[in-house]
Image (cartoon, rainbow, N blue to C red; front, side):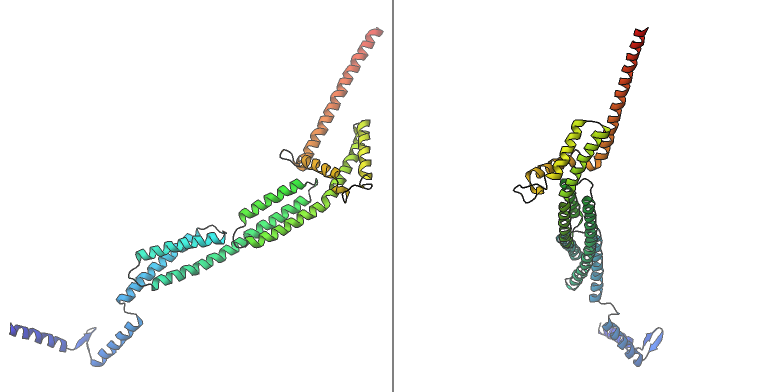
Length: 325
C-alpha cells in the first residue's frame, strides 16, 4: 500500500511540475504571471461573476420588474385627481411592488430594496407633475366655460335673477366635478371672484332693465288695443300703467332709499321672476313661441268671426229677397 501511494504522489508531483499549456502552447513563467495579473484585475472589476455579483444581478432584475409593475399600475390611474387620493394610490402600489420584491428576491441584502424604493419615488414625482399639469388644464377649461356662461346670462333679453342663479349653480356643479387636483384651490378662488363680479354687474342693471321692460309693455298695450285689437278698456289700462311708471318713481317719498327698494317694486319683481323663469316655463326661450301661437289663435278667431258674420249677412239678405218677392 505504501509503494502504491508513493507512486500516485509521484505522478501528482510530475503533473504539477509539467509546463502549463494555454491554447495548445507551453505557458512560460512570464506568461503565467501576466495571466494571473489579468485574472486578478478582471476579478476586481467584476468581469468574472462571483456568487455576490450573481445575486446582485438577480435582485436587480427583480427590482426592474417591480418598478415596471408600479409604472403600469400608475399609468392606469385616471388623472387629474386630488393630491390625497393620488398619494394613497402611490402608497398602495408601492407596497404591492415591495411585497412582490420581498417574495422573489434572493438573499437578505437591503441594497436592492433601497434601489427599488428610490426608483418608485422618482417615478411618483413624474406622476405628481403630470397630475398638476392635467389639473391646471381641466380647471382652466371649466373656469373659462363658466365665465362664458355667466357672460351669456348677463346678456339675456328678459332679465331674471332666478335664471342667473340657476345658471351659476349648474356652472359651479360642473366646475367642482371636473376641476380636481392641486389647481382646484387657485381656480376656485378665481371662479368665485368672477361669478361675484358677474352677479353684481347683472344686479346693477337688473332693476333698470325690468323697469324699461314694463314701460315697453304698457306702450305696446296702448298701441295694440288702439290700432290692432280695438279695446278701449285695455287701452285705458295701458295709459294708466304708462303714467304710473313715469310719475310714481319721480314722486316717490316712501321709507325706502329708492323706488327700487320699495315693497311695491319688490312685489312686482317677485311676480316677474315667477313668470319669467320657473320649473315649467322659461319665458325667454318659450316667449317667441307663445307669442306666435297667440297671434295665430287671434287670427283664427277673427277669421272664424268674419265667416260667421258673412254667413249671417247672406242669410239675412236671402230672407229680404224672399220678402220682396
